[in-house]
Amino acid sequence: MILAPLFGTVAGLLMLAGLLKLRSPARGNDAYPAPGAALGVRGTRIAAVAEIGLGCVALAAPGRVVAATCGAAFAAFAAYTIRLMAASDGPADCGCFGESGGTVGPGHVLLDLACAAVGLGAAIAPPRTLASIVAEAPLTGAVLVCGIAAAVYALYLAYTALPEAWSAYAGGAQR
Image (cartoon, rainbow, N blue to C red):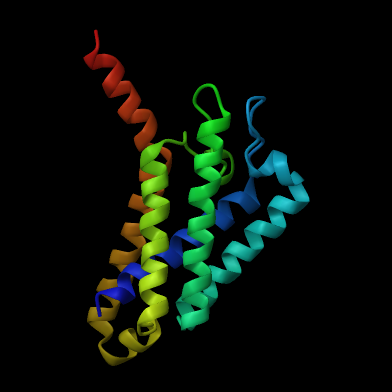
């Protein structure tokens, strides 16, 4: 039962990232392009639709192949983030959430790797679908779905707002 909400959160995060990329692809900066600049607007929108599709399929039918694909996607995101950190001289925007993406850093890589680990875990032992949980116990399922939505939003903030807040806090402590 514990894997279903974790995997639901990972799938929801993929869907949110895809939706935000679809709405406004990131342009990147001169130091290193965010996916929007590297892929172009059309390529970014295709990637966004793929993320939305993978997230939807992961929620509807969290089988081994789908879970492994989610895990591989987040492992690729971690590799991209490491490459982005190595290639840029200063803070760089990942473009993960379109133009509302966050500054990359070690925390970003850890979040990606944690999501990849959830995908791997779900590939080993596929979780139940959220629909089956809601059908079996509607009240529990409703609370679970609300918790997953809150966790997706918390992860979104961890990717986008936390790095800037942390650097502002760290800068204030040095004074």
